[in-house]
Image (cartoon, rainbow over all chains, first blue to last red):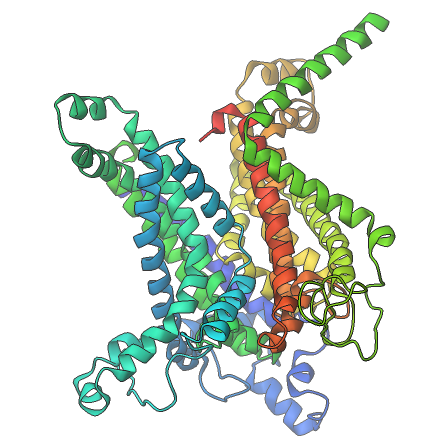
Length: 338
Length: 297
């Protein structure tokens, strides 16, 4: 196990250097002069230009630029946003809880529906419900979620009027930020004293449609994976033994089969993290959800290069870390691989 | 000589027949094939069957509903958009754009990804390390994000969107081919070719590659659906193909302001994307089961 860990960590280093280089290069690969691009057509005042160039450190040799960039990055300094003038790190962590809250809800949605659906389909293999469930999950898997979000808005917000169209909270409520996750912050005793459960319900209602939009593809993946994983286990001899011993169907499925089918399912759930970020970029744009996905898209439209640079580095590091942890847990949970 | 050709024909025929027998067992795969074929036919025949031009504007005919709704006309079967263009015609021309974009992406990413995978798997050692670490870096970015980064550097547009999405699709091909090569290169026919003195490239292309074909074809179908979906997403975010090109993703984002008053403008382009992607995924699943029984789930 120790040797495996060492090998994995050694493999991680070039990747980390690579992604830091990539995010460093992005700003310098832009055709033309990035400073001119950032200043726009009107900002051609030579003094402002020089100042900006100096601020961005673009007046130094390339290697020195990278060294400075890495030194600052390790200390958590990714420069300031050109739009808000605030530090990129702060901007990121202000928005991250919103994305995290949505991501967690989407995963819970996917797991709560996907696992029972997958187990049901596996235990009723080749029956009508199985075909129906797997057909639906393939549709979910193929879903363009940017369209799915709009359709959900048309059905539930425009026609039925039961969910809000965008944002995280009704404007009449004011919830002080503690964790940044509104479902938790709105249960703050002070908030409850002022507005009762109103803010909590409002936050929950705002979460419904984005959660469904973002959770649909993970739901499909979890359901399909659960089905094939449970099917695999059901063929094993010890399941026959359990059945032969006269154990009840439910007990055989949930106690014997499901537990052993869980390893690949958990792995898939861990690896879905990357697609959650992709989902966040699209879902947040549709529902005006103030998270990092919407922030990144807006920054790209505004050519806010320090934000793009910092944002993609944060996300890449998160994805790598999570994949690394999944790898470790997977190996740990499966003695055959140790 | 002639008997040899006939024999070859027969084996090909029986192979094709056998393939079709396996493939048509899977009803979903046949439905998928149907969806994909109708999409291709629609795209190729766009100039013949689209009732109007894609950018043809009908002044005063703004946001007319589809024919079955109140106020719909036979002139515009699926209604008109906010500029008075025929939605049906734009969807049909959009199929052509999607087909072109999808095929370009798949060609670029298949060729590049396969070459990298062949080299990494066959040469091993340092070549393998360098290539696979590069692939690791690409895979650290969630797909759409990587495409967005590339587009933010090289700018939006049709060609750039193709390049961006193709780059995103490379890792899956490389990893797949590499895994295949690692297994195949230990087989005896490869060693036989080596003893005959065949060079590494000849062995890779002539001996190893044909044996990767089954998995590669399946991955190509899935890559096509992924490519079409990602390009539409980029278009939707305003970072891909630019208006007035009748691309399905752009049509969706253009329709967003009218989501309350003219929901059909949002509905149809998305349905087209869903139908094509679903068709390709069903078709790909069927292909995998028919071509590569090892991978059968």
